[in-house]
Length: 136
Image (tube, rainbow, N blue to C red):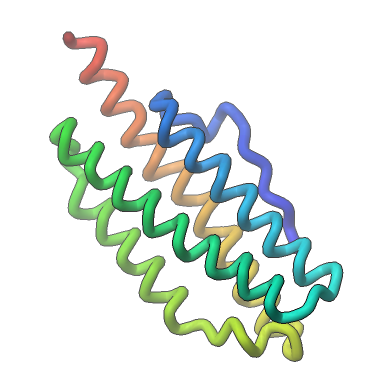
């Protein structure tokens, strides 16, 4: 499984969101480790639940910030969050332990989406926020 590494290129320059992104990367890596080390289902399920719960919290915080700053692409960005959560709801996480192909599919989707979203959509949001702050 790929390990996600947060670096400054993914920073949006908004400390609370950057910290949340780091935490999402960390939770994803813990989930990968749980599977790679053949931990029992309760440990894997806890990591999955942590990721789902934290993603929801993070999305709500990010969406509030978009509203607060009048981000023009708020609807598109929020829709991406909704599609991500909906896709996660379709995965049968409980079958990952016995189906390496499914586990790989889930982890590749998660890794790709997290890196792509933070590197593009969230960075665009950060540029917008920094521009707004500079105007004050």
